[in-house]
Image 1 (tube, rainbow, N blue to C red):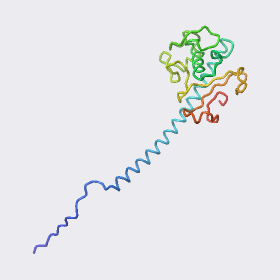
Image 2: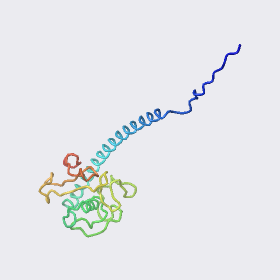
Image 3: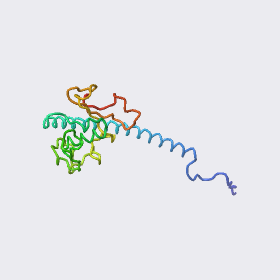
Length: 191
């Protein structure tokens, strides 16, 4: 006796994933990617802050060496407060590459060769023939957020934190809406 074979045409073999399964997997991947991005951005911000702190210490020491060599702290041409002009003056004062941004100095333009027009006080921070991660192609010192460092001589500004020396700081951001938050600034008066 033969048993009847029943064929169920609705019982198809599975070929692939259902839409729900795909959406669940994509959601899990998106959540994990978000967590990784959040952790990475936090580590990046902390790394930039540490780098800026090290740069400020190096520039501060170089400015002190400049004062020991020339008798006073460098001053930007015309006493300007323009951040890029001030940062160019700092670059020239600590690298000896040009003098045209330093008030009272014989004007010589920067040419990318540190030590050609004066003392190279910041040599430890440079490598590969004068290249550094915190100099701009236009020859000025910039922070890890690619903004110029700020500098004020204490004897010229009544609101400086270091009235007998100088203030050197970065606003530690590249977002204009956060630049007035002094609590996040990295400075030589908070070292």
